Image (cartoon, rainbow, N blue to C red; front, top):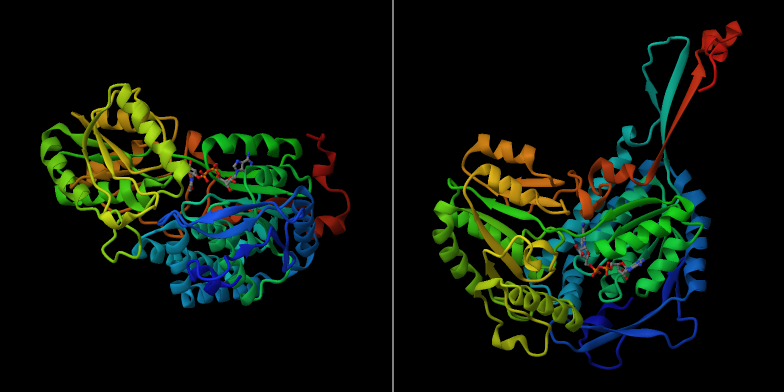
Length: 511
Ligand code: NAD
């Protein structure tokens, strides 16, 4: 992909992404016409086009991944690790261009776009290290209470993995999947979001430059129907999907037919709890970051803020000052701290949900504002709702936009009860000066990751994923690697038994 052409910003002919990249080749749309516009979220302008793959191209991409699987999975893990390390170095070296592309397409403020690029590099580097770590792959001997037999454990790559990602952190969610998949020895077909695919193509360029062989990583462009064709393909062994809970259900149904392995990273409606002993400045900083980073378009948005009665007024006053100080503007504005929503359609959806919540009785406590220079971008002012009813849509549903609700509580039990009263369970944050109470919350909150007095820190070492409607399985960490491996065991007669002839387990009835 030609980055310069994408970053030129409308000068000359607009760039077009091919429908697919299969075994290192750019493949045009089957019928030559099927394409969708890529818009800049910050200006609303069309900045390029993406062609869509047809079912034949999905099939070709899966077959290319299947053909490349033998050699890639047979490669020594350390050799795969060396390639992944090179990817990390290239991402680091090109982080400026990758960040610029994210700002151009998604309208993210510079700081957020920069964090995404570092996260991608860190993920590839961490999985490169796992490839060096013999324990991640080697056959392990298992101690048994019977010395007449010996057992071993093996980790085999699961095969061809279909990776389907959303638009909110396009490069990051992709890296969380591609890095462990390649480390494990899998080959992949990636289906990026139709709204942000230039970033994924740029990343895959770097993979090729780092020495990932042709066919190991393939891309098919398009929307839900292309994702559905991929999930239904019989030669796909594993699906790793990040997106909405609604689409996750379709993916899981499609996977059932061939018993494909699935990892689902879905939605959330997470809580941030401010205890009576919290430092209010810290609580406000964590609330602003948790609810309005990426304009609230985060699966981990802590959009249900629970504040102890005794601090409520003080917290709300400081929170209002902080929210009003957010600069909702295009990334070209150096002081921008919050970007736009991803598309006009998504903004309409978020605004409709706010309308529904207000009609059902929710009350807006205060709003931020959109800066004058926002032009035709898909910006929306942050909204804070006070004390919504427990069944109000703004309290119960994932909004995926800059909308936060605040409720007060009296006791720790109330706070834990309110936080856990959701069908999701991705993350939670607790703000308290009391280490013992924090421990109590960490144990009781039903969420995949609990932060105490910290922003939403994410490390490749720590697995990511949630309870309930937030999904199935975990990404990142060793669990992320294992999710691309099949576990296999073998039990054999110990050597002296084998020489000695008959083995006693052979006499046991089959189970
Ligand atoms: P989405 O579910 O509409 O789409 C996600 C991806 O799936 C896109 O590439 C889309 O084209 C594809 N897709 C849609 N329907 C499909 C189907 N039936 N079969 C196969 N593929 C299909 O979600 P979105 O609007 O792009 O992203 C927002 C959602 O993603 C939010 O719900 C958010 O919480 C979730 N998300 C979760 C995490 C996490 O780690 N848990 C991270 C980021 C985003």
